[in-house]
Image 1: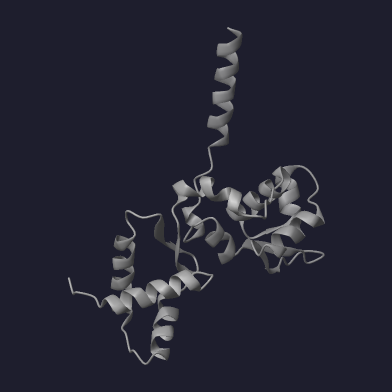
Image 2: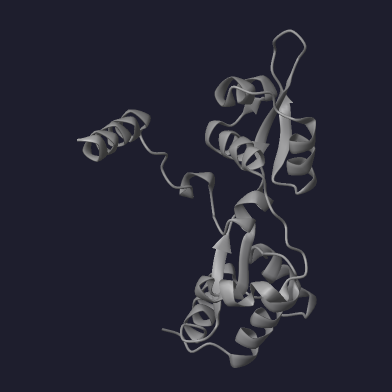
Length: 190
């Protein structure tokens, strides 16, 4: 393995800490080029590996998400830090159900969501998800009224610490779930 320049490691680490958002390898290269350092993408990736190793036993970790790489506090510490965040956002069950339907069934229309949930979807919920930049309008379905179709965004993936939508956990099999409930009910009454 090639010995990496500590200055390069420190510079890239500083970019990741101060960017305020994930950075792609290409963006890191462009930032380095502004300093008149012509660096290959492979060397940047190798440096990212070194940064990941550097933080293995610290409170930080290098995380790859949909929008690139970021340095962040390790998940196991997030609960103890929650009191430091002034904004306490409670997400309603209906908002979470709507978001889950969009994430797992995208692209979907509001009507699709209402068919699955069995209740009307509030405009406030859709607006809230759009404002958080967790969903976006990807187009319009070619049906009467041309309803908007919704998909999740990179911000949604970044906020969930995911690289791609396929990283979401598998949905439980409904029939298997129903059978488990029936068996549990029978065991309790029997």
